[in-house]
Structures are given as structure tokens and as C-alpha cells.
Length: 211
Image (spheres, rainbow, N blue to C red):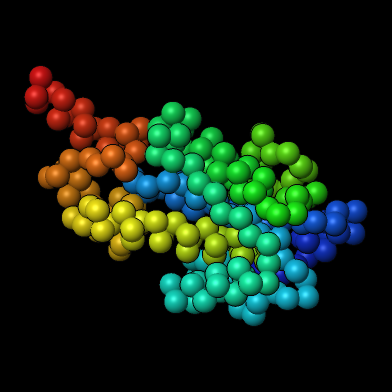
């Protein structure tokens, strides 16, 4: 049975002396195009929206509804690292940069951060705890996963209007068979990540042919 996120990590942090506790998650490590996006969410324990869960198990409509509710009842900051930063830093460091930006952008600085995964960004300015599968176990991280996913999907839908052939409104930049096929036939856009192998290989082949 899939676990349901709860408030136990936040309660434990509060019992240990923390007061302002934020959940952090990112989305977009795997796509070939677009930014990597992170969200930091500081929930009000008295106003937690019903049905919060890992964004991956929710429908798009439910994610959108919960994101709108979270924007009303929680402190939220969404931040990004650009394609250029991803290519310059590598995707892990870029995702950590987006996380640090999201935490720094909260209206109330957190004194403890709960982060999805097994690594804590080295430049984070406050104490933090990494929680493996945190988006399925911790309500604050689940909330962050929803906010990050909704925000990034909206960006990819907008970019799809400029480059409709790649289907980013459907695949969010992930390497689906259809995306890879168009990438090979049309080439890379300015929004593709040059450091990712499928994009790099296509660009290299194009340079080799033209050379």
C-alpha cells in the first residue's frame, strides 16, 4: 500500500525546537528541455488543504486545484535554474540552486527545511533534513512537489506555443519517443539542455555532418 504523507516530520522538528519549517521539492531533473523548478512551502498546521499528496499520484486537475489552495493558505516560493545554468553546473547542482533560491524567497525565513531526496544542498542557509521519498511521506514536501510540478508544467505549455512540434505541452520536455523523434528531425531549440546525452549527440552529429 502506498504511504500517505503526514505531519510527523514537521512535528518532530517542532519538538526539537524549530519554529518555521518548510518543505522543499524539485521537478524537472529528467527532461531534455526547460528549466529545473523547485518549490518551498511553509504550511500553516491549522490550514492544511485536504488531499495533499505526492504530485505524481494526483491528476493534473487535482494538482492545479491544490496549488491554488496552497497559494491562499501557505507561504510558497517557486524558483528555477535555467537551461544555461543546468549545462554549466550539471543537473544536480542546478536543482540544488533552484532549491536554495526557493527557500531564500520565502516571506518568512525557515529555521528548518525538509528536503525530498537523500542530499542537502550545500549552500542552504539553514538546518535541513533530507527525507528519501519525502513527497510521499511528508505533507510539507508533498505540498512543495505540487507547487513545483504545476509551475513547471505551465512553463512548458508556454514554451510549446513557440515550438509546437516537440509536444512539450504533453511531455513536459521529458524524452518520450515522440520528443526524441522530433529532436532528431528538427534539431535542438534554445530550450534544450546541451549537456544531456540525446541532445549533445544530435548536435555533435549535426556538426560532424556540416563539417
